[in-house]
Length: 108
Image 1 (cartoon, helix red, strand yellow):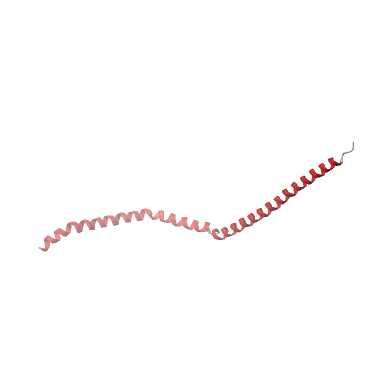
Image 2 (spheres, one colour):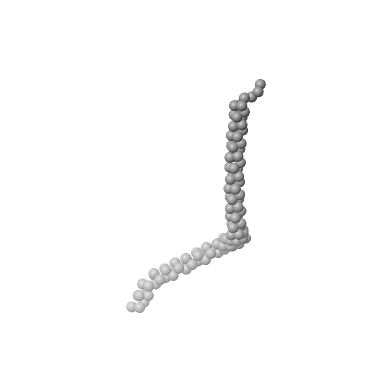
């Protein structure tokens, strides 16, 4: 059986349609590749600048932690001093409150 010319044109048409679809998919993949390349470059630039800014952060954090630990170790001493200052100020307040009338009586 010999294929008719109409059938040959249908096969050629289907092949052309498949080729055009494959060409469109290839073009979309090329565009996607370019977009991904740009995103990768942007991420690399962001990583470089972030590394430049935060590169010394671990050392600074460790120094800060040491300072906080030192302050925490001194906290009980400061609390004792605060208590002593409060007692002193309370004593001065009582003396000024109760000695003022006594001093007025003494002057008369």
